[in-house]
Image 1: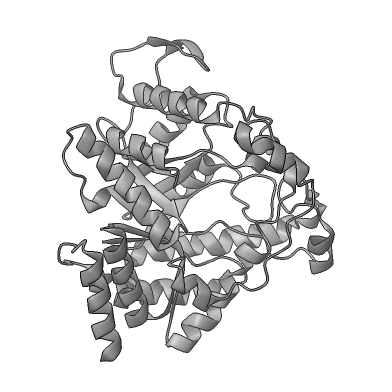
Image 2 (image 1 turned 90 degrees about the vertical axis):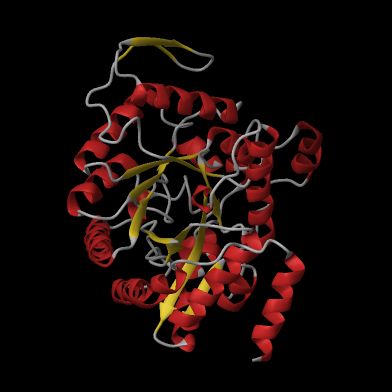
Length: 401
């Protein structure tokens, strides 16, 4: 099993009275509330954390979001290129460039090929569909977004693997009469592809394409359903059963010196859910194509009232739902092993630790404990027993000890 560190580089310094009054903290919050000097300090701290991860053997995940306090990484290829130059050993996953917002997939392919060469073959390429606020920030058409995403992925792949070009592309959404990227990727034929989704038909398509399926905070049941859809699609297509390396999961995580410290600092991460996801309806259910036609009348009748900020999310609840791993090293290792069993196997755990109100020093302490004490407990694990009854029996036996 592999551990990955993902930091969205949040900006938790906007006054609470501003956040309380704002319709949305994404897309429409004025950038006068972002102090560039504080942002520069955050960049320095997180790049130092990435250097530490390279030293101790924790892989790195970058991403991008736009126009909000949840994420200051506005351009994943730029940040991923910096990380590639700062590090020497670990894998780097860009999860990822929002290909449904970016107008030119060929440019995305060029950027990723450049980063793969810069990192000497340590890049992994991830795709995400894009959220509603990203559609607004990127001035992108939200209609037929999934079709556009698949065509963008197909064009990026062909751009990366074609070595006897130029070739031309005439699709439904993209037209390129001349494609011939330089440089070509360091890894041949291309870096590994990942995608983040819990949508079951999309998970099935990922299985048919052999793309790594990543679930973001899906919890036990949704993650199991997604991974099962992936496996079933491969079975129906008469493809080999996927290994655990095809499955990835992102969760909040904090490895404390004690269980009490892990829970206390883990609670600071919950800011992500209680503050930074606040969004107004015009960026979600009122966007064209955001709601299925049969559900649209009810959505419109419900009006534009703001969704209240959740206030009852604590670390214990998130752990119980499988959305957070927190405690001391032994506790976190046990939580991850239990999660692996319940979802039917998994290879990649992406830890979101430097999130919310967690400090630079606290994050580095957690990474160090994770590498030294958690990761060794996740190696050479036995094959998964997918029998749920057997799993519950083992859990009851562990609790009785």
